[in-house]
Amino acid sequence: MTRAPANLLAVRSLLLTHLDNAPGPDDLDPGEVGIVGDPAHRGGYHCGSDRVVANDYSVVESPRDRAGLTLDAAGLDVGQFDVRSGGRANTLASFSVWCVAQCVANAADTRDIREIIYSPDGSTVKRWDRLGKRTTGDSSHRWHTHFSFFRDSIKAGRDQRPLFRRYLSSIGLLEDDDMTPEEHNWLATVHKNLTVLDGRNPIGQIYTRMAMGEDATVPNYKPAHPTLKSLAVQVGAVQAALTELSNRDFTDEEAIVQGVLAGLTPEEIAAAIPPTIAKQVADELARRLVA
Image (cartoon, rainbow, N blue to C red; front, side, top):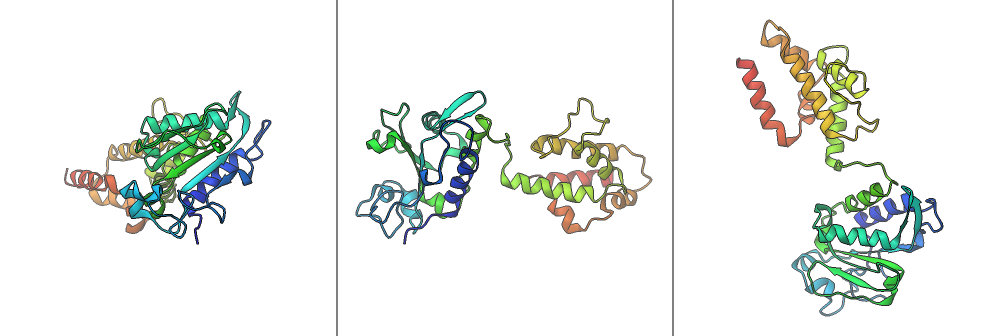
């Protein structure tokens, strides 16, 4: 039977975490965020393969939908809310208009959205359709907004939260964080592995001081947020530490190798290097060791 996929359940959870019980005259209730249609629902993105109908538009109009058809639903409904944050009212209408504007701009985190059916004013119903096939919707969309996701993105389990995180950040209900989950994981690994070195060589000492906002060796350095939200700042900290180490007067390559590898296994070192820069790191290390 049609089921709610994990990636849309994650979006539902994100919205409810920050909009349910939020300050204001009308928060977002759990019953107002739906994925799977009721038992009588047939056809459309709220249905999986067991409920689609002949020539269902949610299947036949895009190869992405045909290739991605499974028992998973691929639609999300968001109901009315009116919460106060950032010194202003934030409503279903303003949320919908913001999301549509992101889609029109073809923001990277919108490209799995096929359509949004919404009302900008609680009266007129509009439809943004990436495929350009429809412009209207029924009157129920005056009080709820519908999102359709291309079925292949649901089948692939792709994270659909980034767009909604950006919205929540834009209204002040979620701390701004532009890192991807992969970047978070990589940064956590770097932090773990480098802080192992603290007290044993300059890299660990400098990195730890910088992460805690105590370092004074880098001009104009600003302490990172406690959540380490800025990957760029943290990468800069590592680069500064490596530069400081490279300027030391070591008598031979072995001293450098021992200083860097103290307390680390080769596996831990490899895990701390993003694949995209692994080759550059290898080339640079090779250059320094033969210099």
